[in-house]
Image 1 (tube, rainbow, N blue to C red):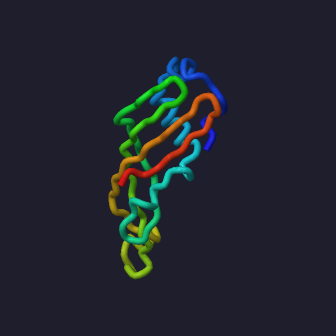
Image 2: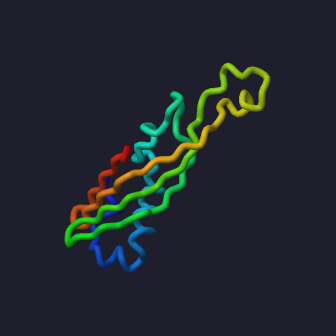
Image 3: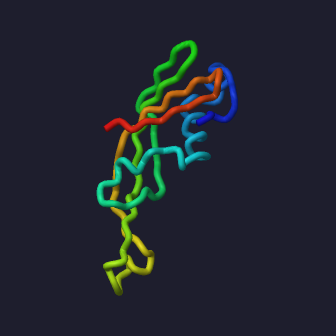
Length: 114
């Protein structure tokens, strides 16, 4: 995944490195591997994240994120309930992700920490 174009680490630090990382993820939520945290065969709903830690070197940034979201599970078996109207019900889920960003190339990789 490309960050949002090539940039220097100094440019991103100027606007807040954690904000830059989170904004990029918000623009590309399909890149987050949240399915691995779903335990009941559902799919990830809206998510929120905050950065726990950022490590920087001259040519890369690594960040650890805590992510919370709702696992959405089909409500096809709950006939006549409010769940049926929405088509799903939700179970809160939590996970941690590692984001590695290479500012020179713009490449970003994301992996779940299990």
